[in-house]
Image (cartoon, rainbow, N blue to C red; front, top):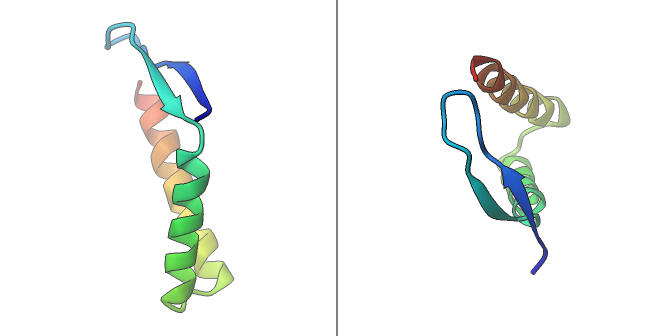
Length: 64
């Protein structure tokens, strides 16, 4: 299993290192994509979902 160490520290949280399985993101992304498509979502709708996810992550990062 390929893992990488990330620094999960922020100004308000203690310095933490944790191991992350680098396969989790791609596997989850493919699973979500397949689920959305199997439920009849168009390409534009899938892009809208992805855009919203990115906006949520970006907003959360700005708050930190």
